[in-house]
Image (cartoon, rainbow, N blue to C red; front, side, top):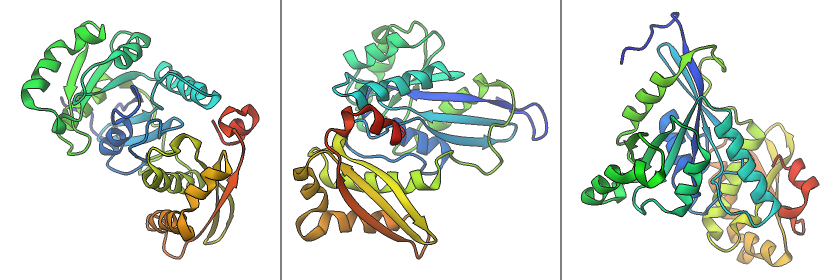
Length: 290
């Protein structure tokens, strides 16, 4: 495919990455953009809002949207995450259904596929973890298994980058003439306070893993020069103890790791606060941006 030269007609538009939790949407976004714009963690529903990464090239600008994993909600937060994912898909020019090739196509993938319109693209991710014979079998049956007809299929690995260039080329070719939505050099629409809060949450999710991932929320509540105060919300006192850790070890480690990704000299002040059942409180969810 030959792309327009700079200054000619620009291809532009929005590409939404959708799928069930833990299929690697955030990692794929980061790989496509070539920068870390969305946090990643082993816990499901790590992504809690539409995170937009910007891929710029000769004659095109693609805004790639990482959406929360579609799942069966157990709280008001879960319902709002699903709503966010559906909006991302509805508003996109091209939708990419991301499927975990290593685990195969299941009921969750079929549920998401049923929500999508014709013309969706399928990215079979994690091919680096999938035996070749099994991958070939899944490639041959994926469209039928998902009920998407003759969908375009792309085997990719967000971890290694294999196959991602072909996927990007196809997606850019699907975009039509339009404006540049972001200034040149932009990689994401994530604000600095949101970025700090997400970096802290990412480190805490890696530390607590399956103990309480859904019960943690982070927000920056104060910024003064290099001083940044970040509030960590949990739902119960017992969870507060887990987040702080023995002699503050978990909190300290999370702060150290997050600070490494911030400008030198940043003082990151982490405070843990209990907000009972915050996942189910509409007013608080709105204040947190969910």
